[in-house]
Length: 125
Image (cartoon, rainbow, N blue to C red; front, side, top):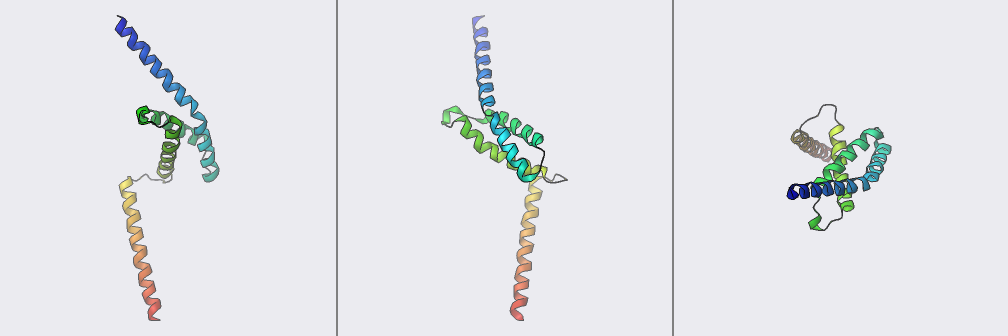
C-alpha cells in the first residue's frame, strides 16, 4: 500500500515540477508570438497558442542529465518549431515536405539553366 502511495506522490511531484518549468517559460511564447506577428501580420493569438503548445512538447524532449537549462532548451527549440510552423502555414494547399523540397530543387536547377543560356546568348552578341 505504501509503495502505491509513494508512486502517486512521486508522480504528483513530477507533474508539479513540469508545470513550474512550463509556466516559467510562458512569457517566451508571448515574446516570440508578438515578434512574429509584427513581422508577418499573422494573428498574435494563433501564434501564441502554437508557441505554448510547442513549449509543452519541448519539455517532454528536455533531458536534465545533459546539463542544458530548460530556458536554453526552450529558446533553441521554440525558434525551430515556430519557423516550421510558419513554413507549414504559409501554403494554401499543404504539400508534403519532400514534395516542396523537390519543387525547390527543380526550380533552382531550371533557374541555373536559364541563366547559363542567357549568358551564352549575351556572349554571342
